[in-house]
Length: 139
Image (cartoon, rainbow, N blue to C red; front, side, top):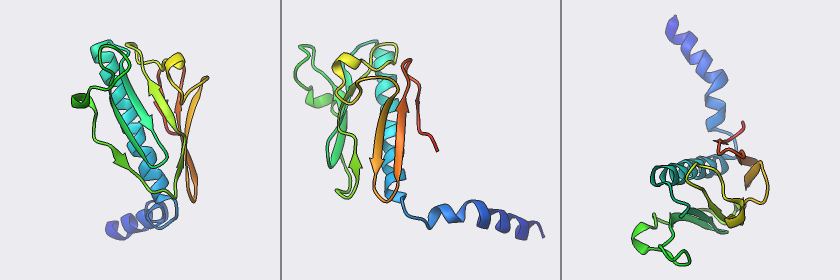
């Protein structure tokens, strides 16, 4: 009896999410959200303004600027992640300061708050970064 109730609840709430369009967008949004949290945490732990995320038309990567500020340290660049060209993603660079806030002056991806990164395909999903550094993905 309990098994049937659980299957019924899953059928109504969870299973439709697996069989609808937009999986690629949700997946990429979650990957970007995770990478943004990582970059923000690195910036706060090292208390430096040199950690960044670069989003291009078909890939993204993150890393740390070298001490001179204008070149990348190849040791500190995380693996580049490619995604489908069918997806349109906000492009640019985002940098965080030592307090976890976006550096607007150095971030071509954000020009004002809230900073919105969109992932478009069959559906549109967004990531929002607030002025004090709170990063979230609205439903």
